[in-house]
Image 1 (tube, rainbow, N blue to C red):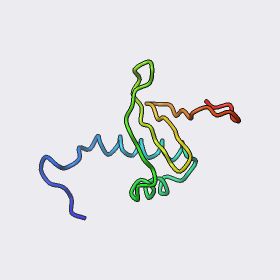
Image 2: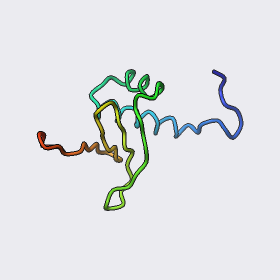
Image 3: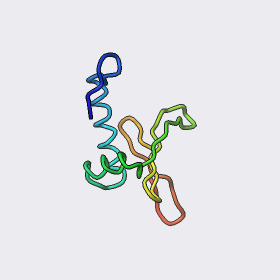
Image 4: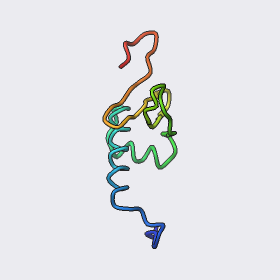
Length: 86
C-alpha cells in the first residue's frame, strides 16, 4: 500500500493515539495487540464514538458478543445479570 502524501498523511501524534486505542482494545477483550489489529482490519471489531451521561467521551467497541467503553485511561464493560461488571 502506498503512503499517503500531502495533507492526507497521518500526523505523527495520530500514530500514538491509534496505537494506544489498539492497546486498549486488546486489553478490553483480553487478546494480543496483533490479534486486535487483525480483527480491526477485517472488521471483526466495530467501533463508534459516544459520550456517557456525564458528557465524557468514549469509544464503544464490540467484538463478537463482548462490548466495552474505552475512555481516556479507563475501560468499562457493561454490567450483566451474572457478573459484577466494572
